[in-house]
Image (cartoon, rainbow, N blue to C red; front, top):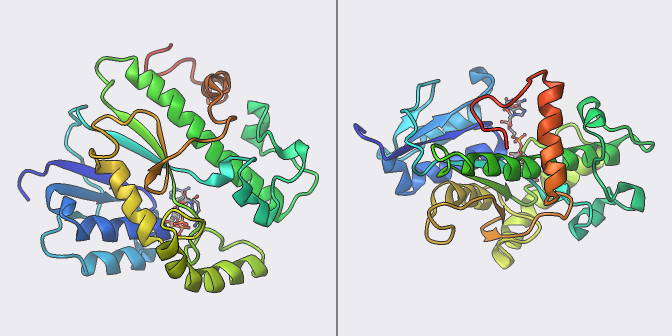
Length: 276
Ligand SMILES: NC(=O)c1ccc[n+]([C@@H]2O[C@H](COP(=O)([O-])OP(=O)(O)OC[C@H]3O[C@@H](n4cnc5c(N)ncnc54)[C@H](OP(=O)(O)O)[C@@H]3O)[C@@H](O)[C@H]2O)c1
């Protein structure tokens, strides 16, 4: 392709969702007009991605090693962060694993310093780990809002959109590889075989095959019909716009997270982004 319409860069491209995204990207017409840039940590362990790329239609334009994307025009750039309903301590879908049961767990973070060290829980173990995972996803959503505010405030960057996508539960990916055996069995086998039926019955329901959120992620990057040209700080539950948790929408906390993170990183102020 001599003159691609744009580039799509995906991190974790060999993972369950990442490779499902790539298989959607190369299979749909978007692929013939966009350059795919896939980043992985270790090329020698990227068998899944390699298989997807080997089976890609010839029309797909592929870049499988680090390359320099064209200078962004700041016309239609989108940054999509992958989140999860586990960011919301009040979401009833967390009840099945009871990670946020009890008032003490309803606020996922209070102190940025504690975040940087890993929040201590008295019930350390799987549930505490999942809570920390949920907190990391909450931070993604908060980051989306604050980053969007800063980009929108700068005329040179104001056309860049930041989105967050909850892909739903996908059994069979690498996410829970270090979980207790019972959880691994449940997700790798039971959920894995049930999710094709579950996603047919309810496309944005609890369990989804990676292919479905892989496509949702593609839409989050490129769709303009449902999302509009500039979808600013949009949170998606699969293919539908959704509302993240109250804690995630707390703008004072979003600001605090940003400012304290700069301090913890010993960066006095923002670099290219304007201080608000
Ligand atoms: N599976 C679910 O049920 C579920 C539900 C909600 C949200 N999500 C989210 O969906 C996303 C994809 O998860 P997945 O289920 O597809 O898991 P996965 O199969 O484990 O894929 C995760 C990918 O991220 C890469 N990665 C992990 N840590 C990294 C780091 N520090 N630097 C660079 N790359 C790193 C891994 O790279 P390597 O291949 O090098 O290990 C892997 O390719 C994650 O953000 C996850 O939190 C998943």
